[in-house]
Image (cartoon, rainbow, N blue to C red):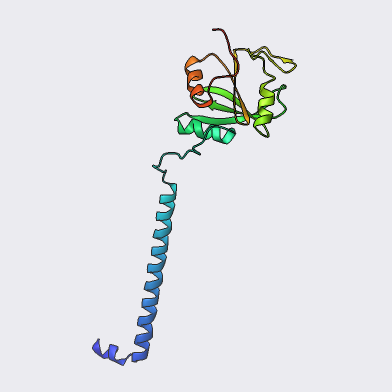
Length: 173
């Protein structure tokens, strides 16, 4: 066997060795890249342990309302658009802690305030529209939004008051 090895020209032996080393290097590089891609994918799919970050200010629009509710531990799920004949803007329905609220965002706080002034103290009329609610309506204002909750869940009302303050409509229990 020694005779055979010695009969191979040394230049052939060196080029074959370089070829084998290149193939090994490519294989290692491909394995490294594959492993790196896998690890980055796994790390990217992992949930964050960091608590949600709040915008830190008072509620003034739809986004800050959702942010504040979630920051305070409420479960909030947008469920779709909503319209009311007494408001000139469409709203969004949010499912919060098992209850539905409607959020209407106006162009600015003055427009929301102007619309809020059209709501009667008991919430049964808004402007020229008389409404027959299935439960008492509770209207809240904050910045450029008006929030409507139609319901009787006292616990939920107390929770939502921590975010929006007292409702602009009052009801005798």
